[in-house]
Length: 191
Image 1 (cartoon, one colour):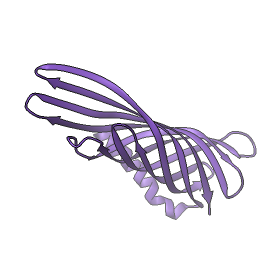
Image 2: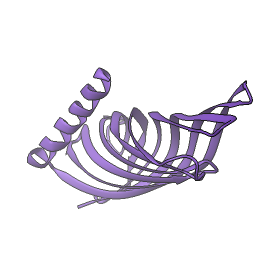
Image 3: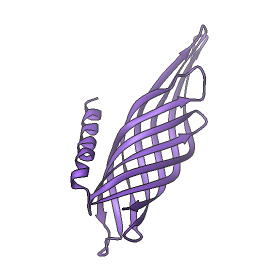
Image 4: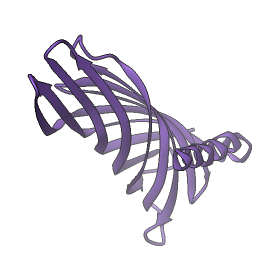
């Protein structure tokens, strides 16, 4: 829990100070592929069985943020995903450090940290929806098309803490969402 608190504090401190240092605001969107790793433990009539499942589907993102300077950016992201197990909505705060690749500074490698909240709504009536803390990081390549438009391809890993249980007379089950991995293509507009 201490790591989670420190991660949230660092991202929030950077985001709160952003308006006073802001150089360029941006809005954007991304579409990508998301893989969620679920663990399932079922007990029926005294017999226990465990399984691990990976659900894969599309992910959609909207974001707004600011470039603090040529090497630092902060942003907030809303992300939506629906797979065979659940629907997820994420609200994330992120920080990226950009490293120019070449003299023209059009191509940048970025690496950063993310923390936020994820709302998971299982597609089963027996399981309840839940808000959980998520944290992780991202990396990728950003290409500046012109002064207003940029595009990027990225990879994000999020550690999840979603656990929920269901039971009746002879049956019990525990479901957990351990992590999420996303690969995405995004476009941003600076103003």
